[in-house]
Image (cartoon, rainbow, N blue to C red; front, side, top):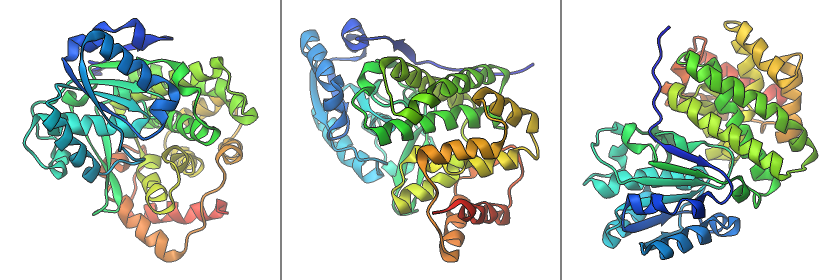
Length: 369
């Protein structure tokens, strides 16, 4: 038996965790840069709770709310200049994965003299402390080192991260996710599921990550009735937040696999939300995994209460719909762009050639609208 495990982030999972733990903000510094999107942080109540706590603690702060879905390197460079001018000494990221991922990039850029494009070399030795406050139940970014940014020059998303980009603290209050609409609720929870599922099947899975993967998939199965009925009570929100946390803990150890690497094209070219884009590949991915790790696929299906990959594929289709119809030119283009995601491809539990990836894209059209 051999494995490694690292999670330097201290996690608080409870109601009112921001107001209950004012002290962590004072531990981080005296000048806070709050990085978030335009609306969700305010709507959830998290932004008001944070600013009230900062005022009570005598901590100066500025709010930078220009983070878009799928944050670009241009956005993080723009915010970084403002953060430097303010002389912030720690970052608070409030939102889904996009603001928290942007916070990690800004934390590095604000502490170093470097261009944003150089982030992907992972060659930096310092970063500002980060407090991560998720208000969706999907990415698990609050407990991973990874930051995924949009590279317009490459027409895809690219990630970076090392031990310095783990948040120092993660504050998870499931109550902040109540303001999510139905589409976001579904997309983010499917993203969380793909994290625990992909981590379980990944080449880099370990006995320790497997424990969390199994727990996450079991809890996701308990959420499926709520997804189908669209009845999102607090119990559902709490379980969804827990699946998201498990997913983040898993991929921090294992990384992601093929559905994530391929899903970026759906997001970039078709504006399909990240979690749904991943989910659209699950049927074909599990079918291919059956050829090499069938015993693991059987465990996934048993935990989900499904008797076949196709039955689970039909369940997902009911929740997220069908993939868009692609022409041959799009298939060829997306297959080439998918090759840029070498990390997720190499972590997949079966061998993939360029032709294999093209065939996966072609198979998507069998279930397309």
